[in-house]
Image (cartoon, rainbow, N blue to C red; front, side, top):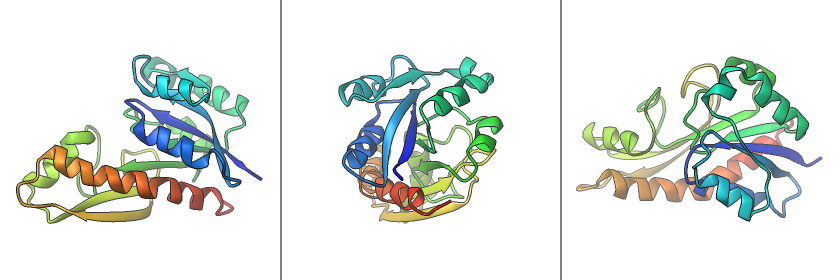
Length: 191
């Protein structure tokens, strides 16, 4: 049976678009809903162009997560994917979707994770720490920022003279290549 995925996003939505396109013609799963934490996030426009229903649910909505859970249930969602989603997922949603919420982090957790560690902040911290490798960690979401069980990690080098932007470009390549594949593996794992 084809799993129904909701994508939570807060920004431009490049990963969300990549995931939607990846599953468009797959038998394993499909994206049936996008939830954006910001009405001005470009992910809203991407969802519209790709004809995927999109709802806005900001901090207030997530403060009373029953509304978000109702949206998910109404769409028949089996699995949630965080793709550049900056709000903490409330415990009520984690409990409603145990081992069914997947996030991607732009570094090799447990290093460089936690509240406030996203985007260029992460890449800058990796460079400042003198790391020789970085990459992505795809993990389940639990009640704490970036502490859920890792599902997969993929690496890339940190090069001499890297800027947060040049490192981010290599990390994004990993995200676009591997995130949809790992989501599909989770969706078909029978959990």
